[in-house]
Length: 171
Image (cartoon, rainbow, N blue to C red; front, side, top):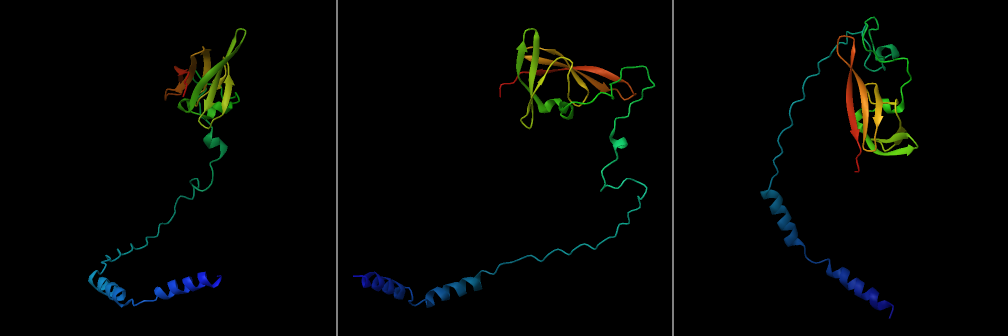
């Protein structure tokens, strides 16, 4: 009884070794009739050497020094200026369109806004705290909105106030 499956398997294998001449003829005629046309490759452009002649300029492969990245503000003018000595908060590295108001918290008379960043972190901010790239300070918090006063450079060395609102989103 154990030899029966072995016998059936051997018969099936012998059946697979039939005449394949018609198949080989079909393959050779198909290959002869259908020649693939491969367009020739384009000529490679000649190498042109470029001599880097900006030794006195900052290298593009080295990060800029700190004094080049700090904000330059003309303090000699008697006009509105941001406080650059103030330590910036974590939310001042995000643009306002990358922040969303997700809710509020309140305790007696105090109310805080819950602000979510685009990477999913949530922060609690109250009146007078800063956010946004333009020295934005929270002026008012209601259960539905946060009013932010930003300082925008006017190009002449002075800064102008701009009011922005962030509304509660339920996405």
